[in-house]
Length: 288
Image (cartoon, rainbow, N blue to C red; front, side, top):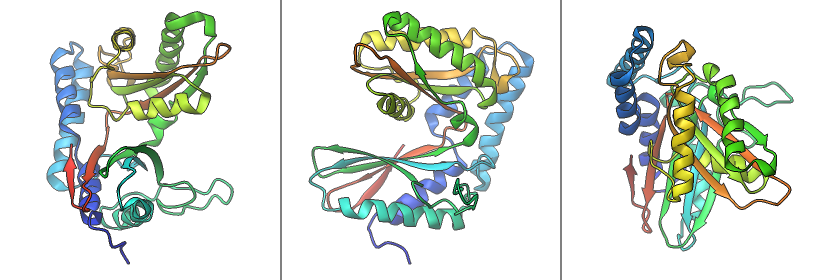
């Protein structure tokens, strides 16, 4: 039986939409990459990616056979009367989406080796952020296994500063990007504790494509890293070209003097995400 909340059907349809089509900013980014690409092989791959998106969208089919681990980023207004209903409704909607879209069952118990569908211990992943007000926004991300395997926690020597961070992240991305279905989006979380650095990196992925950090120093870091990654020549699908990454999104937190953790989270070109806004009265709308 479905959880009786006003937004359940809106959220279910949002997940369906995200599973079969890309956000407009990602499509536009891929089209810009195609227009700038000079390698014939790279252009072929980008054309194929865009055709894949068109066929999936027009036929209501999942964009990729890996429909991903469901991840929800929840910004919850502390005055909302719906807080207690959010988690059970998300679990219920994921069960329904698995059956109806369908989503590939991708949650495995690491000890029993048993597939539990897409709902199990710790899955779907729910990242909470409590904020003022009575509104709730829920951003759904389908996190593919290939790009997740390319993520990492880097412990950078703290005396290296920003140049040391850039070198460490660049070396990691060049090593793993070919396996992450490029062109990728790169999230970088700098500072804080080890768990916070990874959380910042994952959260940065949900920003609109190419939206710079508000801090000019961080924005400049994003530009420098993006330029360096794209000069690597890895290219679409790792087979050469000038577009290895569509964007770099970075964020930071203050760190301990003896520690400089850096989280790196990659998302493949199939950046399936969508946001639902829930008003104080429970009415919901999709926000791309």
